Length: 125
Image 1: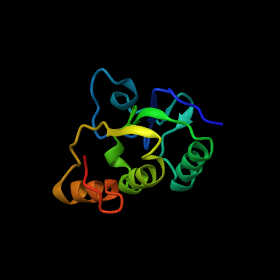
Image 2: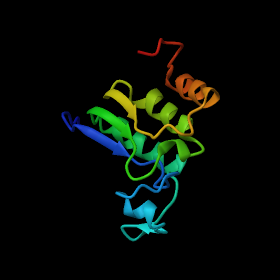
Image 3: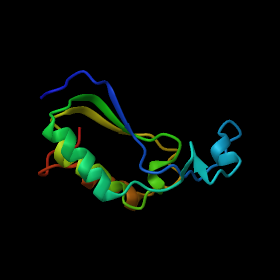
Image 4: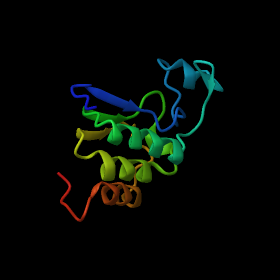
């Protein structure tokens, strides 16, 4: 089976955020859970299983966004999450995107993320 034209795949590596903006009640009001689910971090094993299913079923997305209610840079293994996506889904996703407030982005972190995006020493586009 091959599915095409599924638009955006939005992945939430974590629903924790390092801000408490007035317009965002879950973080402003320090909710312990969101939609009845305790806050947490995406497991690498779960992410690998999800990616494996997309590969096996040949599901094609316009793009993949890492974000939602939390800031992806709070996930301690975000570079590995990106690497798994890059290594396995690059031919099935038009482009990858990470939405963040960038507070936690320093040079060392940036270098790790860039390295995780480079497949077989291919230039980062």
